[in-house]
Image 1: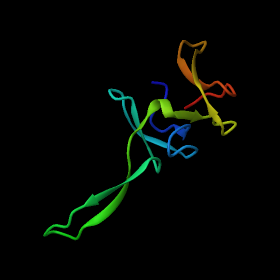
Image 2: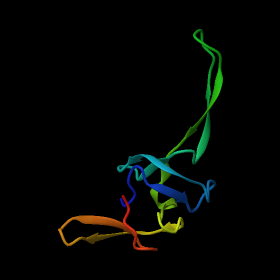
Image 3: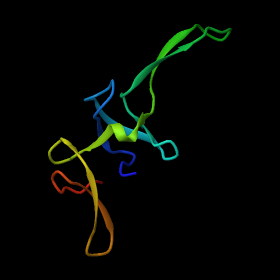
Image 4: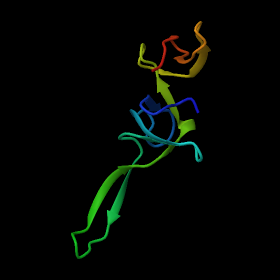
Length: 102
């Protein structure tokens, strides 16, 4: 998976298309990613003896195929590539501008 925690991503398809956010959590088994303030759903909590009922807005995971990394230089969606540096280290970079991704 080429997207890592902390990356800025944009949704390219689905009901949240066009929204951007930071990757909070990745589930490699299901290929789902949790993105801050994207794909929001309402959870209803029934009232109990401890407190009243309420509605909570929370993020739900979105499939990795519906996301693209935002290039840090151009602020546009970009594919991710890998290159080997001269010192032998592997580096991720945005293919749109060639800028290294942290």
